[in-house]
Structures are given as structure tokens and as C-alpha cells.
Amino acid sequence: MSENKKKPTPLEFKPDLEEAVKRLEAFYAGDMIDRPIVMVTAPKEGVQGARGSNYHERVHGDIDDIIDRAIQSASAVYYGGEAVPSFNPSFGPDEVAVFTGSEFKWSKDSGDTNWSVPYVEDWEKSLPIKLIDDHPLWQRMLEFYRRAGEKMAGKMALCPLDLHTNMDILAAIRGPQKLCEDTLDCPELIDRAMADARAIFPKLWDAISEAGKMKENGYCHGIYSMEGAAYLQCDFSCMIGPEMFRRWVLPALEEEAEIVKHVVYHWDGPGALVHTDDIVSSKGLHTMS
Image (cartoon, rainbow, N blue to C red; front, side, top):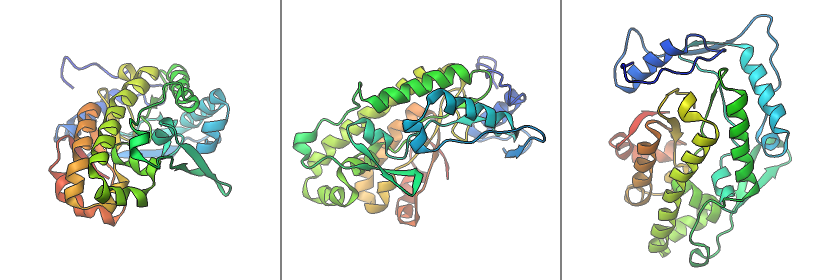
């Protein structure tokens, strides 16, 4: 780590964090100090953990109780190598779409499964797409980050949201099948909708970063960083070809990567492999998962 780099805030559950960060920063720089990065976790003998939380509970349950249990669970785990104790307050894959006006649909069989209910019937009438500042679940999410940032400070790191942004927002609020039709029937409207979706990302990122004090304490989503780290993705990309991907998805991903700094791109199924060359050559991508 260079002299002008800010040292990571020590974590009670990861006493060797500074050493881990040195190796992670070398990894991001395309280098290696003495070995590849390794992330290992194991239960601590004689330390009792706590029950975790699922999407449904994080949407409807007691925020402080959920955070306290996450801290108790982290205290019962040994984090070896570059593994870092962290907490993700995600409400579900389509949460960003919900923050724009959709609603969650739940399965009675699983509290950890949900979907968004599409609400766009006419793009002309629905644009612009934007975060609803006073949406109760968006405000709840920011409160989650504020309380977690306070309670977890010096113990564990916070993760960014489940970032189904860019064209995944459009698929969630319109429905994937109808969006596929729209890409052929009204591509100019999709241009406008994507401009709105791209404007959502920096506002979302800055808001959760500030609420959780993540710029001070570091970001973690499987990859710890003092500057910013997250998984990015576009699951809808498996339904479009390379030309459409380059028109709508790739520019958005590159903008997001510039903001995030350290990016793991998450593939979602073999249908997306048609975009391999574009993803590998894209600006800002570091690793694929």
C-alpha cells in the first residue's frame, strides 16, 4: 500500500485486515505480493453465532435486531486470508426497481425469494424513471445503512446493495418479455429509459456510501476496498444480442465501473456468454464471477 493511501479502519473480527488489504490492492493492480488471494472462513470453537436474516425479514423486521444478530454471527467466524466480515442489507434482487415505484412480490414458500411487480405499461407516460426520495423502502434502506454503519464500525464492513441496475431496472419495471419487444418496436424510448437508469446509479451509490460511512470504513462485497468495490451485472443481457448490448448495457456498465473503482462482473447463465468479448475488453472490469 502506497504512503498516501489511507489505512483501513481496524476491525475487531479481522485483526489482520491491513495485511489482507495490501494483498487485495496488489490483486487489483494486477500484481501479487507472495501468493494468490485466498478467502477462508470457519466457525470459531466455543463461540455461539446467531440466526441470519432473509429478504422478507430485512424488509419487515426489526432493523436493530437484524444488525445485532449479524454482528453476533460475525463474531463466531474466523476470517482467514483475505476474507473480511461483512453485512449486506439487501431487500432482494429487484430492490432498485422497487425504489423507483415497483412493489415486491413474495413467494409464500420462501422468505428469501422475491420479485418486482412491473408497472410500466407505456414508456411515454412512465418516463422519467428515477429514485423516489420519500419511498418508504428506500428510506428504510438508508436507515439500515446508517444504523449498521454505527453499530458495525470497528467490527465488520458493509456491502453495497444487490446492484441489478442499468437495463435490469427496465426489465424489472416493464417485464423481460415486453422489454424484449420494446427493443425492436420502440428503441428510441429505450434510449431515454436507459438514460434515466444510468442517472440512478451515482445517486444510489453516493447515498448508501454516505449513510453507511463506507468511504471512511471501506467497502466490501466479497472484495474489500477502501475506494469502492462491488459486483456489477446485467442479467437481462442474456436476452439480447451483442449489438443491443453495446448500445444499451455496455456504456452503462462502464459508467458504473468508473464510480465503483473495483468491479467483479457477475455472469448469470450461459446465455450471456455471447457478450464475452465485449465484457473482457470493457473499461473498468477487473474480475468475472
